[in-house]
Image 1 (cartoon, one colour):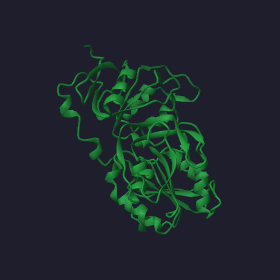
Image 2 (cartoon, helix red, strand yellow):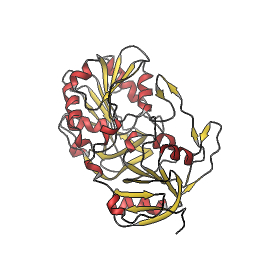
Image 3 (tube, helix red, strand yellow):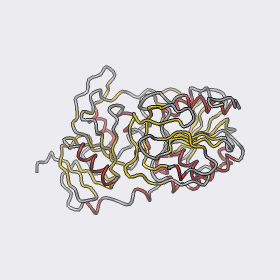
Image 4 (cartoon, helix red, strand yellow):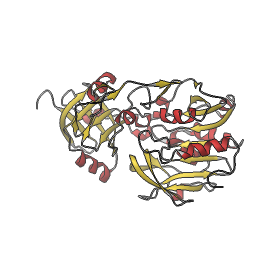
Length: 370
């Protein structure tokens, strides 16, 4: 075993050996996989991956490098947050980068962020293990072997409030228009901020545990409950603020974790999935128009048909399983999607949903569905 060896220790006792890149360090997290073929700068900086070690199933990763950050109104255009969010990265082969706007290669980016990477792993085998057995805790080491991996795996991922780590401590305001849209920031992706800013509103990001009164103090034209990491069932205050705001019929939009928050707020149930949906090419079917869309997903919790509260009208479904991908709460003036309509990274099929939210704000009841 040479000094250049790196190791992955799984909760079930499996040990894998590969080659290190990125930071020389030891990290723990929940082992998950994404089938995205591109968009690794966006995926690795997505706060929803906080606390997780990512397997990328595409065999060649890193070929276009890492671009320089681009900002407008304080919103990033080519990353989903200011820093890398994953605990570690596992790939089959690290490729040399070559692109006109590449400023760093992938290994140097990981190193600058203190994140370890391992290549030379049979990611197909490892992904099948996660699909068969479910997500599990793991330790990755790029500093050599570990004598007691079980003792360093940390606590149960589902019991840790990762949103508290991803959410801002004070409000953040992006001035880009007239009127305010308040984002209850549970670990928001900047692609969502960019889409809302493009609607012509100021975007006000507030901490995840802000009360309905504090949110209302900004005079919101609408409120968005964002994506974020971890277990939604730990966020009672967030669900309570959503329920209270809905009583005033302020237009509400929930995305990913926000979709789950609405389900909990209105009396539904959200459950842990075996291995989640994490990809940029997942189909969803609109139950109203019967149209299908290709969308971006990153979630390990979900609602099935039987989990949706009575008020909710199922809007989108996954054709692959029984996961509800969107709900309309007409009485409460709220719409939610489990997938990411801002498509960062991914296709732009579902961008019209931001237009629907804009119509709700304008009190336009003649929306896409009449």
